[in-house]
Length: 216
Image 1 (cartoon, rainbow, N blue to C red):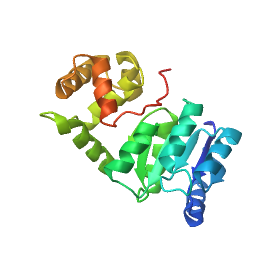
Image 2 (image 1 turned 135 degrees about the vertical axis):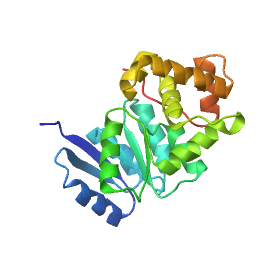
Image 3 (image 1 turned 45 degrees about the vertical axis):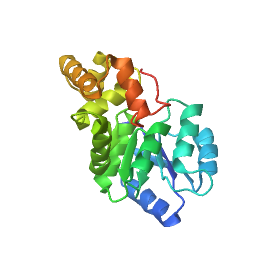
C-alpha cells in the first residue's frame, strides 16, 4: 500500500475548495488535511499541519499566493507547492516560480492531470500546464537565437536547485549523457560560459525559484 499523501488546499472560494475535496475523495492515496482561504491562514495551517503538498491559488485576500509560497518556502525549503489558478500571464507565472512553486497548473485541468501533478510535485518533479511551459520556453529563448525546449527548461530548473548531472538523470529518468547534452545546449542557447552563469541568467529572467529546495 502506498503511503498517504497529505494536501493543504489554499483557495479563497469555498465552492472551489469543496470541489477539490470531492475530487480527491476518490483517490485512496491522497488525503486533504486542511484548508485555508487566505495567505495568512495558509501560513498558520502549514506550520500546524506540515502537509506533503500545498495546492495554492494565486489570487488570495491579504497576502497573495506567490508571496505566501515564498514565505512557506523560506520557512521550509523542502515544502512542495503546486499552483492551481486560472491565470496564465507571464507576470503570475514568473512570480510563482520565483517564489518557489514546483508546479503551475490551470484550473481547467482534468482530475487525472491534477492528481498526477500533485504526485509528481510530491516526488520532487516539476509539473507545468502546456500553456505555461510554452510561455516559459518563449521567455527563456527571448534573448537568444533559439528558445530552450521544455526538457531543457526542466534541466535548467534542476541545475538551479544544485542537482548534479547524475541527480538530474535520476530525477528525469534519462541517461546521464543525455543530461550532459542538454546542459551543453542550455549553455549555448543562453550564451553562458558555465552552469553557474546559466543559473544566473535563468534567475534574472524569472525562470528559476529563488528559494528552491537543495538537492537530496
